[in-house]
Image 1 (cartoon, rainbow, N blue to C red):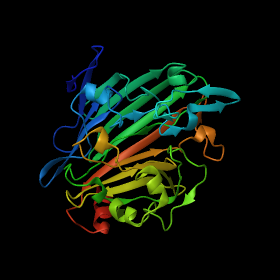
Image 2: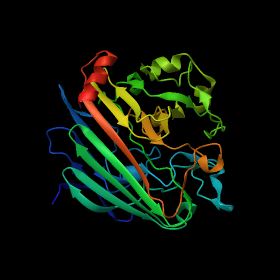
Image 3: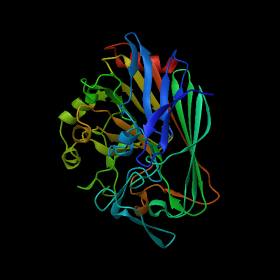
Image 4: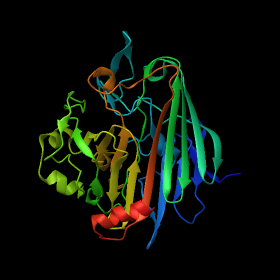
Length: 352
């Protein structure tokens, strides 16, 4: 039997397990059957294994977590304004779990549900979840499949779904990255590059205003690698509105790499490959209040546009019967070296 270990119980007595991927000689992951959560991810460095994502100690902590650490997000990642939308003339209301708005699938979403383990070996974990009609207010029965797999220095997450009625669908993945492996090292000291052509300005409730703003010349332009500290130093009204970075970056059309992240403190680099049209960037500023002492991490969430069901000018986000949704997110890691130049980061990742 593939290796798994107990990870505690929920308040109702249901057991949660951590399922281990990896043979101990390279990239190693632990994924929970609660929410498909990536609870731990380690990569070897010259100083030994480095923990790359922020994590919590047990199942109850994750179930109570307001920050969505590591979850597979669904049905709809990000926000739906007013927790309401119309599909084919039918008005729908979903659960309002962030003030009057809907966030990351609702009160439980997919991240606080137990998923069924369909298959598990040291290189692959397949999880399945059935979301019934009316769950969190969404129309239609939806069947979701999430497959984690290891391929050398790469962690791959495949998301697939089908539904028997038109429903908004925008899944994503929500790990918090601090490649330094040290909570004392600011997550904003990591270098970030992303093919951003624009971003979505938001209101005071973090709901998109409806237009795509140009990223060039703003702190949301990461076409050239820089730290979030350096990017934010120039100031911008949108950083004041959101309290920091919590914005959807609109990617260049046809881009297959969403982001590249590098820690000069550990020397570890990450490239995220996905064909999603956008990337939510969140700097984790809420963690100071939600999980004091945990430190911060950067969320880099490949996805469709937030509030798309209410914005006809945004790319469509309705999954329809007879259509299979499929999205692949691949995380590629390399030891580029501590304090190295950006071209060395790219070269190391290209060989990983």
